[in-house]
Length: 440
Ligand SMILES: Cc1cc2nc3c(=O)[nH]c(=O)nc-3n(C[C@H](O)[C@H](O)[C@H](O)COP(=O)(O)OP(=O)(O)OC[C@H]3O[C@@H](n4cnc5c(N)ncnc54)[C@H](O)[C@@H]3O)c2cc1C
Image 1 (spheres, rainbow, N blue to C red):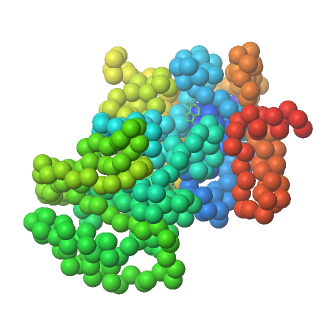
Image 2 (image 1 turned 60 degrees about the vertical axis):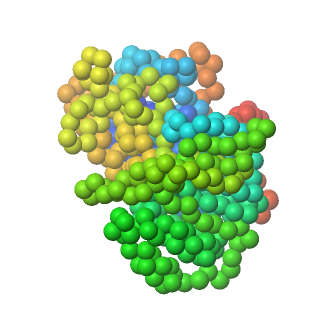
């Protein structure tokens, strides 16, 4: 070890935020233990980024590999930190680390309170994304997609879900449902190019005509939208499935007959400007979008069952104007000393990998400032802290997966893919990955 004395920090979660936090901490001379719920690292970079974005995922995996082979970083996969997990937050707080960094993403579900949103055939985007990207246990659960899919939301995740529907499922129609209008769409046009071949321009023109009076009442230019549409190059090929939009529609309930989804009831909305913000206000008129599958792509919340102070979908951080990463207990009005959150665990569903990296790196500066108030200790002592936690996990019978074993799994997956002549072939079940490790 290059440093005679070190601080030792546990990072929980090995998605982009946790991995880049680990890199920044190691670069500052810390010894880092990285604990991850999933067997494999990467988080949504591995299990969220769209199926066929192989180049992007490959590039990120190579960056992550460098971090995970740094001798100052120890990775342990298949370890959940939660009230009913392999370790609790208190276990970690009592284990002798100088700081704990939670980079566990946003694993909770944001329910809108819409009647019927837990019916079969109604999915939350994250679960479906985890399913098609083969994250256990979602990979083992069935997510049957019907012929007519309504996706609630108009962000980049909607684009990914639509991409899945029109290119990987047997759908006829996909409709993206937005409470507000085309000017308030949240997806990036570059992302939309991936589904341009399904986008039905006639449907779009008809939809703009339908909502024109409401756009104009809000001072928005409907003709400019049609003009912009005319400027877009026509795709060379078209999918059988047709993609449309339903703007100015607020979901009220999912309609079902005999337990089968038959439609999404929406309330029509109009737009109301409030300063810079454009709000949707219900008009009282109700309509039904016929569909047999509904996917809510409206962002996520953090998981309240982890055991960190939680309020309104977020972990609580110390009040302050600038981004604060220090976890705060509202009951005692005190810091939870040495405990920090970064990435989507700090701000759920906030941006791309680059943003999560920046957030982690900014957060680590605050972590290092806290750590600097504590005495560094001999490297051997830091190793004992980590070994102590590994012993605890073993005593509890946890099937911990170190990075060397992740490499073995990934090697086997590459071999499977080569054999099958496909780009990727991930194991769909934890037990298959663990069986492989036992068999070798
Ligand atoms: C559908 C979708 C598509 C996306 N596509 C792109 C894209 O094309 N390009 C791009 O740049 N960005 C994309 N993003 C955004 C990007 O994935 C995120 O910005 C980034 O992954 C957030 O990183 P994170 O580390 O904060 O959280 P996550 O990536 O969610 O990582 C969280 C990690 O914590 C672990 N964990 C969770 N709970 C626990 C626990 N209790 N105990 C221990 N470990 C735990 C998980 O196993 C996981 O490894 C996409 C996101 C989504 C949802």
